[in-house]
Length: 273
Image 1: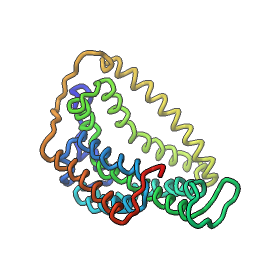
Image 2 (image 1 turned 135 degrees about the vertical axis):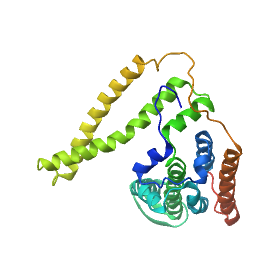
Image 3 (image 1 turned 90 degrees about the vertical axis):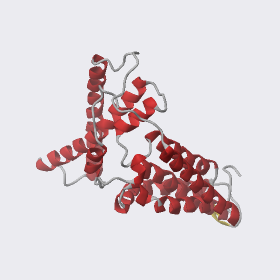
């Protein structure tokens, strides 16, 4: 953590999100190790496409929820937006994937066949399998700890790290702004009809707020010397430990099991095959 960037505890950051403040095993893992785990869990799923490996990965990832300290209910709530948009990717694959096997129907450029159905299911499951690690690994991660790790362990430029930290700290303000605008519109009798129009008008106002807040924040940070090229010092040290190696090794093992299940069942497919 930078001595000039503010202090925030993990419990304080987790409490507003409805996440228990108790210490979980994953809380002791360095944020850079968590980033490495996300890469390990994501890359194999991006270069392969089959339903078995994705489904196995989802089951194994959900079995690790107790290690994260995040309640199952919270995980499910955060998966709702993913589940709403995942069918879009699955539908496009269902209609426009390369035909194969039995063809059930076609219209213009759209063809539904055995191959497109298999690929659509695989894509749908893969979207969930790719989103779960982000939810589980970073739900309780304090942005300040992430910045400490990126600067000290990953050796990223402090200007970039502090910019990311400032942006992450302001994300929560968007939720407060949206809630305040909703209450203000209801108080004026404007919040009970025209849901679609209300959403886009509030989104535009929120965009204006974000631009103004970002401009002021950038000016304030430049005035305080955050943009200088001088080497910075960090109040809290961030180092790697044996637990980080165990966590990354566990992610590798999880993905080996998921891909192995696909190979054993004969369902494994590489993208483009």
